[in-house]
Image (cartoon, rainbow, N blue to C red; front, side, top):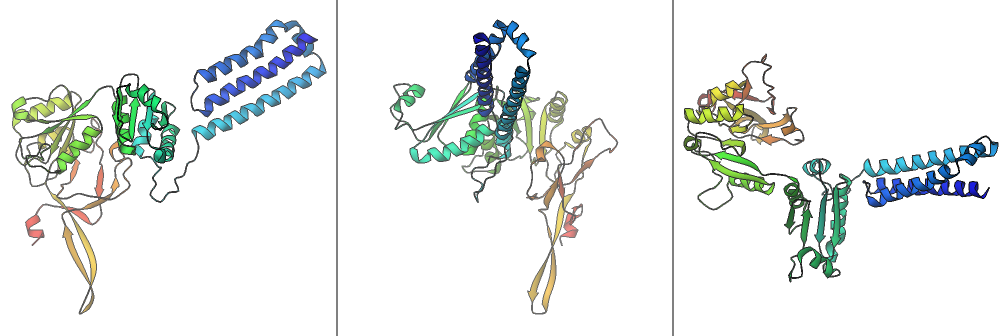
Length: 405
């Protein structure tokens, strides 16, 4: 009977160790070597005594006492499984609420999407002062909540100078605080900020395999991304934001080049004032036909020469100016009077069902915009999706001078 007692005790021990390994794995949202080691040890403790005492096991199965023990074992297993599942669900599908007035601990939709789609391990090391430790810890808990591939550690360089030397080498004499280092197996990025925007941009850089190239067409009076005068022009601001998100941005003169460079992913046409030449239109047509992407922002009352190209893709430029009427009540000497005005900046709060506008929740205003429509509603070769709808008080005005007199 000593052999049987050894088997029964080891079985329960093995079951407990195996459960601890599984519980540890789901608690940290991933199974590392510690979790798998515990699971393997538990399996050995569970199965080895059965294999070495199989005759006694089969003989004892017939006894009523063994059957009662088996029933108790089944109940224990079920309880452990339920506890483990509850722990798993609480870790991976927990309900989190940010109670701060400014929602300072809530991550943006873009950050959440990037974290959920991580396809490789990312390690973040934050070197911060003692006063910043708790705030950084709260932010990193949010990051790690959305991905099991995001790992972090927070280091106080004053208390742990050896960790600074480990990361930066013994020659590092001075460290700007805060310093945040993100690493993958292929890349690393260092920033001097603990803000979400900077951390997420760095996360994009270390996880993106290659730079994407965005070309802004120039030569037709478009918005300049490299302005001659210093200052933050609107197009220059867009360029800087794209570069922060690890895009390469450059100007493109299609008239001279005759084609979009092979490294181009997106071509932006930002408000041309003059007509495109035929060779430029052909270059854009070829680029689109080979899978390229074009963002065309064409102002009304402007002949861009791109109307035929838009028609090829079932998009019609209506050549009007979208205006919107506004009404208000003004107190005058004769009482409360209603006044109406017409604006060239229509507002929009309704958006199409598309990834570009998926998370738009606020109203936007478009100054001097023209309306678009489909050339052929029955054309199913192209999946054209409306992105923005102006209000019911707006319309496309073709005789603008007469209307605004």
